[in-house]
Image 1 (cartoon, helix red, strand yellow):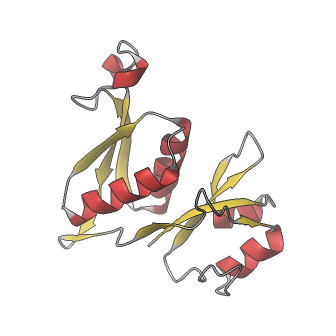
Image 2 (cartoon, helix red, strand yellow):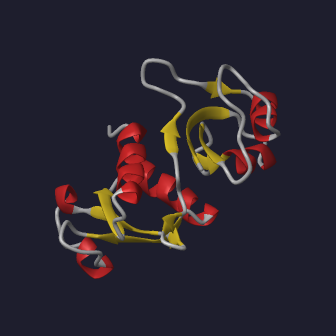
Length: 154
């Protein structure tokens, strides 16, 4: 299984290097995290494709090892929209939060040595609910789903 820290560092490094697009391995986890970043406005487009290019038509014709998710990075006034993306829950120390703790995190208070969310910042939560497995922290709060806080993006 690909860990979320590789996606976090890949996205952050691509923004810092001023790339227009990135291609990451096609996994449910990567697709979910990039979809959350898309909904939050940090990236402008998510497309399935191959190693060479974003091509939804060719996606189903290539083997799994060549399937990729392409994301178009977003810039405003020649500055990256996403300035920081860091892992909260690490493989050696997973951070699980109950609903009350997620509420405190979203309202600007420190929880379990995790800094509070600032204005415009999001946290990505992995829940045990199969229908809503990957959510932004505020969505998890609305759906009343506790879970593991994976990463944050600003």
